[in-house]
Image (cartoon, rainbow, N blue to C red):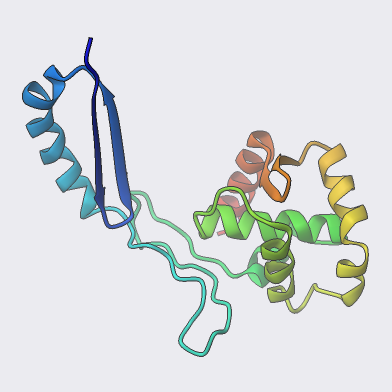
Length: 170
């Protein structure tokens, strides 16, 4: 039995297929038409630094592909809406900003620390000094997951809760 492979990339949208060769003749034209229409609705790739090399919080399009309004918030605004009180809270805030508004998945410690510093009204140098302890607190509370050696993400339950809280605060 032979297997066909195809990979299509249109801007930020990428699709990969591996399976029956018959699909390439029977289903591919229809798939290409659908992917083409979706590519107009997908946000362009996000650049996290501006021309001067300063970190920028990513902006999403005004409307999602489902036609829902999409909010764009900075780390400082997210921290205010989540009423950040501790270093662990600020880590969760940074992850929420990067994942929900930046579209990132699997964030490194360095990226988290950089985003924490963007919440200027809430960030304190002690948050970096106690970063390991604060990460352990968030992990133990199952608010974040460790995906790899240096890759972290919000837990699914925490992300749903934060999305609801941020939407309610609008």
